[in-house]
Image (cartoon, rainbow, N blue to C red; front, side):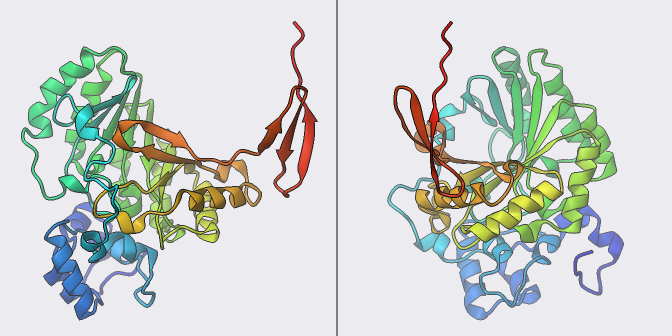
Length: 369
């Protein structure tokens, strides 16, 4: 059980509706309830006018307030760098999702899968989010108003075999409403896989109730991708939430974002990936932080991630190693950034570098048939 105020009962703390309803969402509440200094409150207030702020009491409880560089605090508390630090190549929509949006609420970038923006809200507004352009805006028509058109689009595109529910965060929807969407998607005969992208297991794990898991289980095959960015987020509550999903037969993968000052070093990522393996969450992707306005101060050089993955290769098992990728601008898709251990290749032999740094020459086998 994470620390909670004395005036909050255990029942309230473990109720996801209480957690969502008691998010801190403005500078005045932050000044009253959080140990922020005057300058930090001023930064938060100025930044939140452009990029809204919301964080659950649970996620706030993970912060070590004695550490100015706490990785949880840096992910959820706004700073002036979101407004003042901008690199020349950053954009509001760096992946050109708007270009691949045939209908409001639906992104169709890859041929065999479509992404649905089922909600415009999140339990916590992560400061590195690549959809900050949507924050505080109400899309017209709303997703539900446009749902018949979206469903028709899915039915008319038989090449789509996988649908990804994203947002915002789909798991903050009411369970009955989420089931309505899942049932409608599952009834499209050519859709084989449903995937849900959510940070709820990390920032509001009490949402993962037995009732929710029983409902989700009915719509398998289903995968859930979540986003743990630091080992400090792997708490008993988060582990229990993941375990409930796993026991419902829903595999979990993790998409970490490489963030400057938060996890951009070997020890932080090694501890994170090994911790995820312990709770049976597969490290899937390690993403370069994208060139999105308002998040440039989190970006790292390409060499940072490549060097870390190079070091991880010889220090932990393969099940702890995600793929390092960059989501290319202008909608060009993902590109792998993993280092190659093949140094050269001749007609009959190839040279490799081992995990110990040695060079080994091996014959190249060919099939004579």
